[in-house]
Image (cartoon, rainbow, N blue to C red; front, side, top):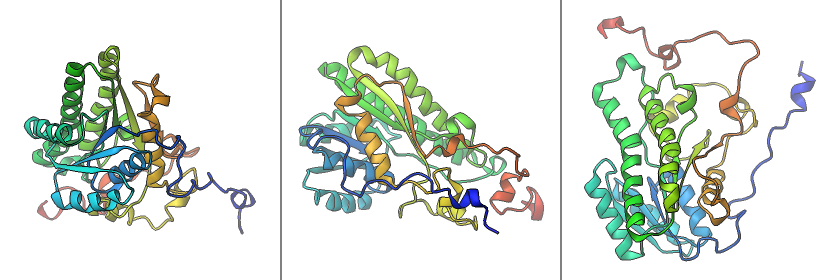
Length: 302
């Protein structure tokens, strides 16, 4: 029998269609926006929303193939798209990427630190190299990009805006993602620390946390793990639907816009309240290994 209270639940309404915008047309006319990890996934979705509002884009990624495909796709929006291959773990390569941006279209006024690394693994099986790699890209790369951006604006005496893409397990912990959760906690702290340090110089720093927003460029490890549940993904969210990448893009364009100048040191969570979800009666505990479909540690000689 269907529960009548469930039958009345409809969740949060669907977002406006792709191409809609909350900000005035031309909000980013004359602005240069740099997005790391901008060649795919949520990075590309955010970049496209800035472009629709008039921004010139600078896309940064380690993979040239991702950049060339994204450049072609986003150029169709009628805005200039510059690309720079860059490993954000390397301060020298970061400086070169900013040099390319300045030479081609001017100093970016906005940087979106979206690039990160992540994959599910029990902490006891995580290799030292896996830990270092995820922390190096996600935390160190975010800091080094922010540092280069700020140094150039400090020298020029110009304002700027930084948006760091975080994760809700920065606050809650992330079983199965110890490396990424620890790194994202550091990113969250950077938002709050750098906003105070650089605010007097006209540089605002904010965070942006996405919820579940499926897209074709999710890593195979994350896609596989999502596929392990037999339940519909919409029904697992308080909103009764998953998010759309464009909803993250709209949030990013607002945080970096002239209409959010007095917002700094804040992290905006765009997940339909999923991270605040709690159970009235706690469900049975399952280990991370069980959730990942792994045998007990040490079994079969592992």
